[in-house]
Length: 179
Ligand SMILES: [Zn+2]
Image 1 (cartoon, helix red, strand yellow):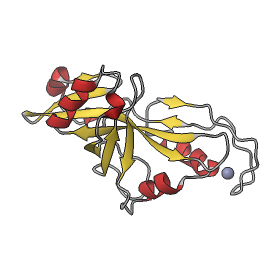
Image 2 (image 1 turned 60 degrees about the vertical axis):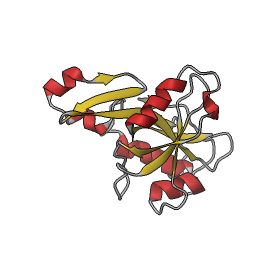
Image 3 (image 1 turned 45 degrees about the horizontal axis):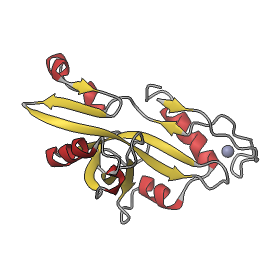
């Protein structure tokens, strides 16, 4: 899925062009492992826009979609969002299910999970540990990387990125992530 609403009227400080219609949300419709299960397991699996339940070698893996936001250092641009999947243990997923329709679910303590989507960074992003912050009804949970992480995606989440980098990220995933 992709959302193309970002634009900047300013000349880019890096390439001196004006970036228009820049992707501000990008991500795959399923966790990476969705493509790896065999057809028999796929029949037993379940995929919605928010949740994926995947039988795998006799056990069941549980995934939730979340938004990993990178602030953009330009006024009015907002944030760039990776719409990605996070794997949760059974206890955490049952907590998500318990509060899913609760109007006060944003008050639930953050849960721990691991990223289940590979993104175009030099170091792998799958397996990175994140905290999952439930938001108000209708809003996708927010994913926060560990404040101590040295991974460049964690650094980008802490420090923000420029519009040039947003355009670059969109170019990097164009052929990899179904839109
Ligand atoms: Zn640029």
